[in-house]
Length: 342
Ligand SMILES: NC(=O)C1=CN([C@@H]2O[C@H](COP(=O)(O)OP(=O)(O)OC[C@H]3O[C@@H](n4cnc5c(N)ncnc54)[C@H](OP(=O)(O)O)[C@@H]3O)[C@@H](O)[C@H]2O)C=CC1
Ligand SMILES: CC[C@](O)(C(C)=O)C(=O)O
Ligand SMILES: [Mg+2]
Ligand SMILES: [Mg+2]
Image (cartoon, rainbow, N blue to C red; front, side, top):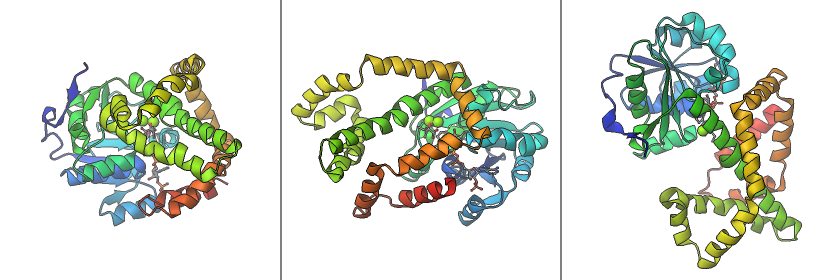
């Protein structure tokens, strides 16, 4: 088994007297900044004026322009959207770099040569294996989201120590840290989100929903069956693996799992997963995403709009209004995103 790193493996004094600039205050940025602050780290946030700036100030953080935050820090963690990072790096971070350690939560831009750091800086990543809002929520609950860490360039000889201290400060070493490389983190993260966690899952859920509704079953029932209940099933897998989930379901469901699951995810699906992995490894996916952004996201915006109009989303928005325990802020957030991209 691979070596896992926990709180006791980090030098808890390593970040004492050091200032960390978190650039960006979105999903990951707010979680890293607030968790580190509560772990006793001296944190500043780097942003442009706008919504996030006001939010970070309201959350009690010191906020500066990206350049000012970079210039005063010992460690610069870049938590901007991947597609924005190369431009902001070139124009605002690079001119203010002396010998700060440069950090990322995803290796995309370094691995695919969109950011080429100077050879005077340590370059490393700490990549939580979960959404930023959960990095924050689990920290507040006394737990954490596991993280990968990797060193790309070690000028000081301390890059690994920094990675572990940082991962501890955001709460990730409560759950476990796993050492990797920029290449492995980038390729596996892209594969996971495309084939399983996001792309695979949303397509599976929609196909199930459409199969039921097209056969004449009620859309509300199809929503409960194919989307709402998914969380309850996944929670059991999270707690006890596949066997933990299978322990709780009926034997009828388990037999159906054994005989029908492989009919849905068959060899053809696996062959397609291998093709997706190859596109990622050979840089085809990265190239397409970079070009899509250069063209102002025509396909991204069109698909995003079409997806938000899918019947499963319309039914879900209505049903969730009747479930006060489900976080409705997400719907509002989504409406804002959709109207902003139209
Ligand atoms: N989302 C996640 O949970 C995960 C993300 N990662 C990685 O973490 C990194 C950050 O991703 P994520 O948290 O999703 O990013 P977000 O899309 O949530 O980041 C948005 C933030 O970036 C700011 N921003 C955008 N453009 C600029 C700019 N030009 N100048 C200054 N600030 C700007 C926004 O400010 P404003 O309000 O002004 O627009 C906002 O604060 C990526 O590398 C990603 O791959 C890794 C693991 C999981
Ligand atoms: C699964 C999507 C993710 O890789 C993540 C939350 O880990 C991302 O890029 O947002
Ligand atoms: Mg990920
Ligand atoms: Mg990702």
